[in-house]
Length: 110
Image (tube, rainbow, N blue to C red; front, side):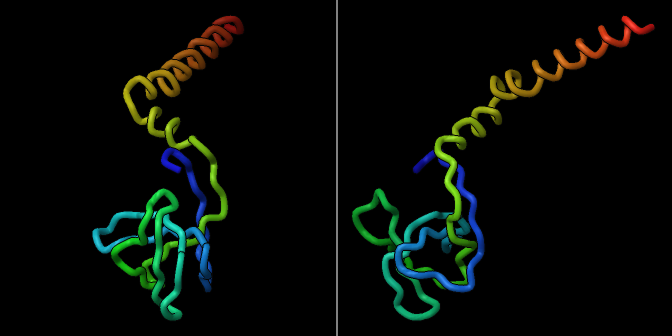
């Protein structure tokens, strides 16, 4: 699903119903399910939310790997952390608090 983080692993063989990540002809990374295999090296894929199969068939050398782990919704947090409010909330503010805390500890010993 959109917003999920996935872990992929390359495999020597891919079979029907494997969910794979591949690079399409426009160099975009896409994660879809294999719904049919035309030959050892040509795969027909389809997104689970799509009604029809992808227009372009995928060659085995385009496949980056098979999905082995899905972490739901974590991608939204990662995306938020890349924004200015997220950067401030998760990086700058904790960093300032750690530095202030350590500075207070150092002053107590000096």
